[in-house]
Image 1 (spheres, rainbow, N blue to C red):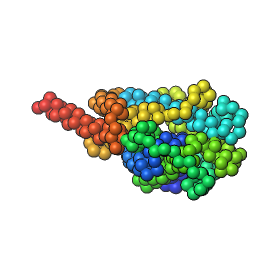
Image 2 (tube, rainbow, N blue to C red):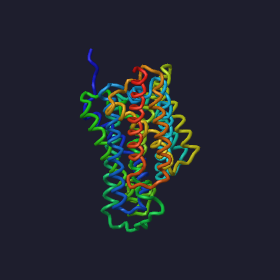
Image 3 (cartoon, rainbow, N blue to C red):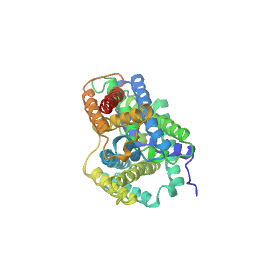
Image 4 (cartoon, rainbow, N blue to C red):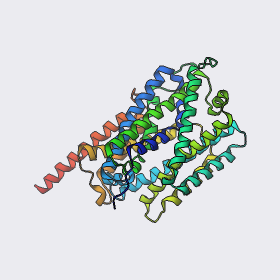
Length: 398
């Protein structure tokens, strides 16, 4: 019996849904102090860097027919990959909490019932989504995604083409440098990087599906960033609920916000379940996803999550050197054969070095952010260490 493979279109649709998100719009507002031209350049450059990395990660999974965390085993070993599985579950718990908080905040701005009530409503809906399951949600997800996208188009028109709003904010470099802005744009595709193979591994056409996934996600994400950035620059408004009230969307806007938050956050919770299984086979995907949703809902109620920049930089410092090692291992050295061993120490040491280098680079302002220089250095380190190990092995044999 042949396995049912996913089409290029359905892969594109999944990533369309991932890009259509409130988190993207809210992160876009951080770019406003740069002014429209520089902010746009930072958003485009960041998505180009992040998109290329996302493509590399997706291709490994698609070609090998392995989930994201199974591909990590190929470079870091059976036990070594557990570190990344745990870190990935933690980032997904973080994202689940942030998305629920953002959705609850926006919903409360339109209908003042209390953020905690909205957080619980969104949390319950995500759990319903998990119970229904990925395969049965196709039509419902498509409706919710399309609705938010249409709302985004209307917001785009109101923000960029409505002359009633003339309250541009002052352009300032003090709040954010160009390099820091690039890094914030890289961080979004980078945070999806440990998930993309969970979907591309099922693809009928590995290359086409991975390319479609990355292109669709990047274009939609850029558009969402633009809405947030444009709203902050042209309306002086950082609050999505207030922007919606000005557009006269009211209750329709509220429903769209709630359901789009559910569809995007469901992907986070579902992948946390998939990642949990690679930590222990005793864990059941569905129940792990539900536990993650409950923790995320509780965190959204207890902690205000208005500024997520440090969280995004933390994701960058963990996953940029990880994918750099995988790229060097799989595409350049063509090895990636560590899954039979417990630890691939050489690669783990290179990853730790890459993590430290990223944190150091955060103190340096480069025009391309921290991720690209960090990845280049990590790839070179990987090749040097491999060459040194090969030379020492040959000496021993000699």
